[in-house]
Image 1: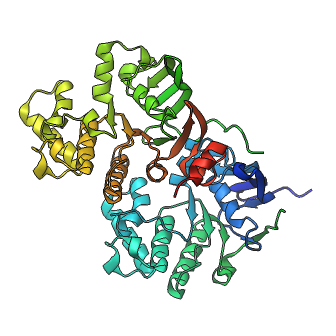
Image 2: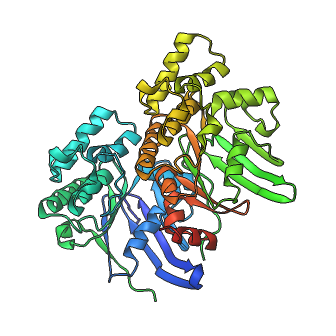
Image 3: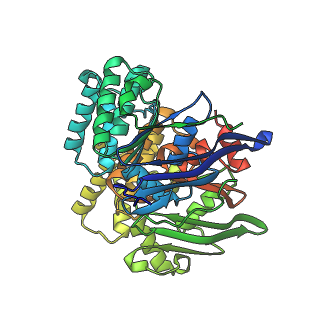
Length: 235
Length: 267
């Protein structure tokens, strides 16, 4: 037998993860996905594929614990030790969300009286980065994604969908993460911003960030993809 | 199918600031709170949701030591109170703990403020209770605290009864944080305010939470407020906790039939 020479331990080892929604009012069980298993190495980009409604987004949300997994395990190698994302203590998940695991969606939740640039700075401020430095890095991100500097101090609730999404992407990707969950991050972006996003994902990958993605425009990232996970309808 | 228990914390290096077990309170034959356990970590915000009469405000008043519990164990991880059940403190030490380590903002400003005393005076009162006597220090400290709560300082001498609801909440907040407490309790802090004013007050609370590592418990029936402020949530019904979880999980994937009903009843 050949010795097993893994250079890296997988950062994430998902075993038989399942999610079923129980809707008490109509007394129904609605399965999202069943018995999903895979490994993910640092620097690997795994793409989840399958028809609409097979639970690709639900899988990402279960790993982020926005949804509570129904069964199975998701062993994550955190910097301070291994935890099972499916049943880790709430405070540990909250800690990982602030420091190691990022969730990138296409939807921004604007907050009244918080400007575009402040929204992007916030994750850095939470991580203890000084305000001046955070402002500079946030501006750099927004200009790379093609958001005009004139509107950085404005409140994004009135911005177009595409502009809001750029702010959301910058906010989600600005702080260093070890695992990124990408939920259709490029769905409504213009070509310039899609190219900037692709460029950024490529850099993150070379830095060893592990990523799981669901992509609307898979062609943008095709040459970055290392593996695919086929999710079939569990019904 | 859903796991019924979670692993103990493994990654968090902090110890909980607040630990309470088995909090219980009855009024005659009515059980208001029946065996509530909770923990709050430094810098964390715990939300408590539920309808009127669920016992959520009673829990908050017990944590503020203004409502005696029938039974239970309540601890704060602070040097002067280590290992002590705070429910058993004598009157003198209870007052000292409340003045120096616990701040509270009530839904009704008159519960937390003297409506006819200047706003600056309301905040200074807290410092006087803690032993500060120099007029210059009091005025500076009150101004600082009001500024941190984003209260317009040109209205420092106005009494709360002349202020808008949003301004009154800022005075309460300034008073609550004046002594740099370890624990901040918020009882429906923005209920009854106009939506736009509510957003401004929430924004101030978020900034304060980021700048100071206060452990916060916020009680509200408004799920939008809870989503904005809370890291974790307890759902209470009939004096008991029926569900707990990360705030987004409880709101986006509620498990208990009552929580599902509560979340789906939101407009």
